Length: 207
Image (cartoon, rainbow, N blue to C red; front, top):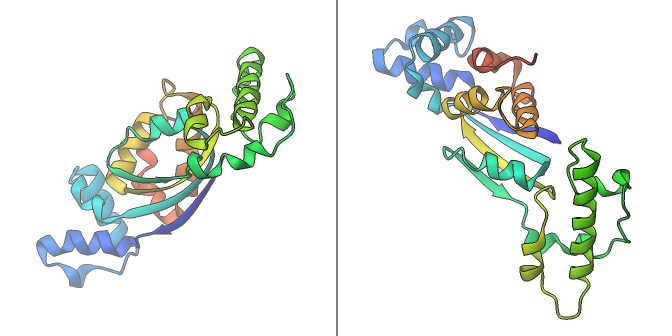
C-alpha cells in the first residue's frame, strides 16, 4: 500500500478555536510550542476533543483490498471517494492469463495475505473474473459482482483529528485485521511530524 498526505489544516487553526472560547488570542504563538502545549492540554489531557475537529487531513490511499475498504468504511466520521470498479475493470480485461502460484504477477491486482492456499485461491478468482470480463456482451456492471475481496482499490480519504484518534486507537490494536492495522500505522507515519503529538498516545504499539 501507499499513503500520501494531500493536505492538512495548520495547527494554529485548532489553537485559535480553543482561544476563541477564552478570548486569549494574545497568548498564542501561531501554532508554535505554546499553542501545541495548549492543544495537548485541552484536546488530549482534558479531553475537550471537540476542539480537534477543526483539524482535517486528506489522504490518498493506494493498494488496499476491498476487504480493507469495508473495514475503513465503518469509520463514519470520514469521507471516502473510491476508485470505481464500474469504469476501471477494463484494465483487467486486457491482461493475459493469471496462473496458479504466480504471486508476483497477480499482486498487481490483488492483496496477498502470505498464506499460499488463500492467495492461490485469490489468483483463481482473479482469473475467473478476467474470463468473465471477456465474454460477449458482458458488462462491467454485472462482472463486478464476481470481484474477490482481495482486489486492490484506492481512494481519497478525509478525516478530522478527533475521528482519526478513534481510528488509530481501534485499528492499531493487535486484534485488528492485519491489513488495516498496517494501514493505521502507515497513516500515522504520513502525518506531519509536528502533528504527531496529538495521536501518539492512541497507538497500540507493535509487539
